[in-house]
Amino acid sequence: MSNLKTLFPSGGEPVDEFQTDFELRSLDTMCVNESHLQHPWWYNLKYAAVGLIFGITFVKAEIVSWFRIQEMFRLQSFHMYGVIGMGVVLGALSVWLIKKFKIKTIHGEAIWFHPKKFNKGQIFGGTLFGLGWALTGACPGPLFAQIGSGAFVIIVTLLSAIGGTWMYGYTRDRLPH
Amino acid sequence: MEVLSQPWPWWAAGTIIGLIVPALLVLGNKHFGLSANLRHACAACFPANLQFFKYDWKKEVWNFFFVGGIIAGAIIASTLLANPEPVKVAPALATELQGYGITDYSSMVPTQLVSWESLFTLRGFIMLVLGGFLVGFGSRYAGGCTSGHAIMGLSNLQVPSLIATIFFMVGGFIMANLILPHIMAL
Image (cartoon, rainbow over all chains, first blue to last red; front, side):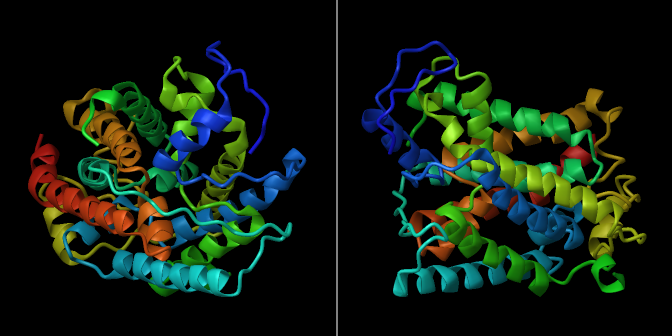
């Protein structure tokens, strides 16, 4: 974790990241790993390469198709269950292997995992998310892929999703967790 | 090319998605999760002094690159690797959708329901704007979406992720079977 105090674009006070950053992020985001390594920006292109393969798969396997999502929620097709099920099985096997053999990153860092804590958000938020998933036929990743596949009107949906995320941040303290 | 242009089977897609989990971990200790991007976008563009958006989003910039790759991949898949055939839809669904005048399967989205023109109708507004809002609000409230909970969380055998995934499905089943028919009838 960086020792640097960071100024935020909002003009708020600098926040000591040791105090708040990890705590906030461990609760709410998937990316809680903190690396001491500093890389030039173009190192991030490796993630773009993984995303490229993912994006092709999204469209070619019709995972981002509104119709496939409707079939899933109506139990009319095995397709999406197969995709997610296969993904979880291979993902779990990979995580198990990484833990068992203490596999490191290509930069030699240990790979960390963070347990998630239960809170009621997984129930309330999960249900709200499911309602939106069936309505739009897309979760956050597929929104980007739908736009890339030429459905440009989904830009509106994406902006609305960012608005929804913002509204969660705004109302967070008043919501049951 | 012929094989790649056909719709890919579930096992091919499942294999690739499953391998994205270790790929991101080994490439740089990154945990698969896409809804976090929506939060980083808030933190970067309009944090509004909210504690929830006060963090160094620049550390998460990898995820924007990841999403950029997804968009580029989607463009490639729908141009160079395009399947000229419309999406094949289960007969039961096709029959149901026909009742609402939805017969065009040429796009990833039902263009007769969602388009720039439909945006200003009640039905289109609900599907595009309310739908997006629920996706963004719900995923953050749940602490993750399909990738973060259903794939990454379950891969790491996390019970909270299982709970979240179950309620994703609950919400989806309710919407698709009980609410969406009324919206499509608007």
